Length: 163
Image 1 (cartoon, rainbow, N blue to C red):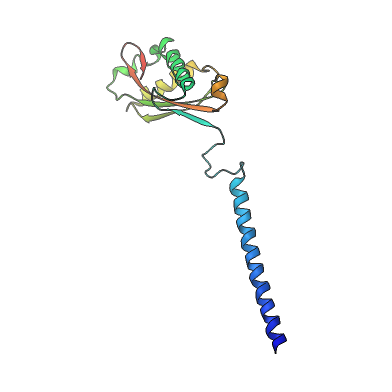
Image 2: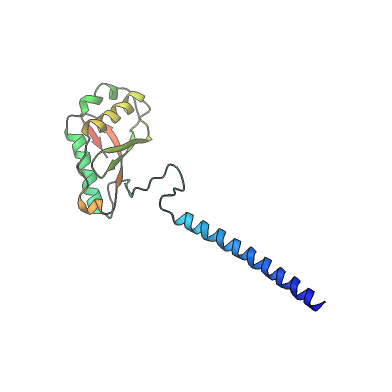
């Protein structure tokens, strides 16, 4: 009788140990999957290192200087001709985010606030595309970022002004 009880206890203990082992294996697999850099949490998130400049001030002075150079390129290169006719229509000031890759190419143009006039929004996309490529990132910037997203409010009077 004692032998039978001991056998049942050992079987019960072995069963618990197997369950604990399965749980530990499952947790280990979860940790490994979470640590896998090729696995994306969301399909829209890329593995690129991104920087954001949402205003004119940022602790990273290199980022501010790059954004200013990009703004000057758009403002000073006769791009107003592209939008001259369409900006005569009543419109809101568009707020536009331009994502620039390290090589100076444009990844995307996003309207955070639309002008309310599709022709103006299309003209802004043409202006951004017409000035590409922008300067390649400096070594100081490319050490930290693969893509920089720069947000500016666009104003039109006698020229394009990025604020």
